Length: 306
Image (cartoon, rainbow, N blue to C red; front, side, top):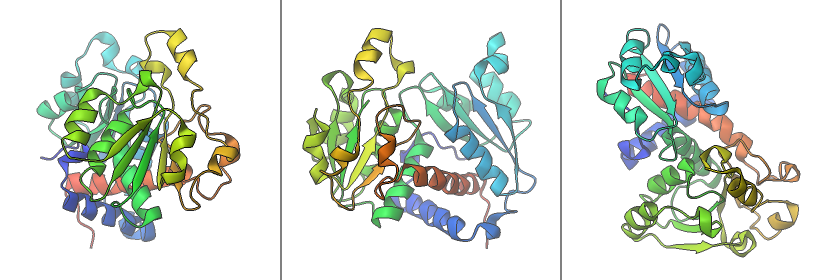
């Protein structure tokens, strides 16, 4: 049985196959509308979520399957002290596949070790968010036509941003990738990402503080919010939350074909005036997330559609 804990669980060739499947789903939705009839996905969300949870549920419904689950730890037996391991053992009796979001790093992995069904990590603390990464890869490939030979700017909370950590780990496997890491000193990428992923793979990167300095060189700008829920005190959060705001004036510094991505939700870091810019791709990114999650569900369940 196969699980999805990290984007690195799949080879580049497997990722390309999954992305090709997602593109086919995008263009031929009817072909897949009954692929998972009789199948159920359990969405086990111990942390709040809008896009990820509903995206998984929409993906399974689009495949003709059904959904069950919970949207907060308080509405599950976790409130009574039940462990993640026991919960997934129980859920394995009800569903065919599960997506788990949990505030503790490694929780999804623990679940996968005892599960009777495939488990998808839907985000574990500040660690990994593989299906967001699959979404990001599909978005970049669909808009730029490739996943290699690109300069990627990552801006905002690079310390706690699990989407950033996952995306870096996935993209270093493609040729000609260069990163510009844009953050205040306090929110720079962790040492393990800098040393064990970037330097270990000889990936060119630079760290800058000013977004304006980086914009002219970027093919892709990946904005992130400063995550209030990852801070230990309100004062630090308030000091950091508006450090970067992408607006119309800053967009004038960027290439005409640069694309702006954001895992959402946004707070203040992208002005709503940017939404009308053709380079703003973050709502298209949400739609791509449904297609790639459909492809992932089919892959983990071993469902083939001819």
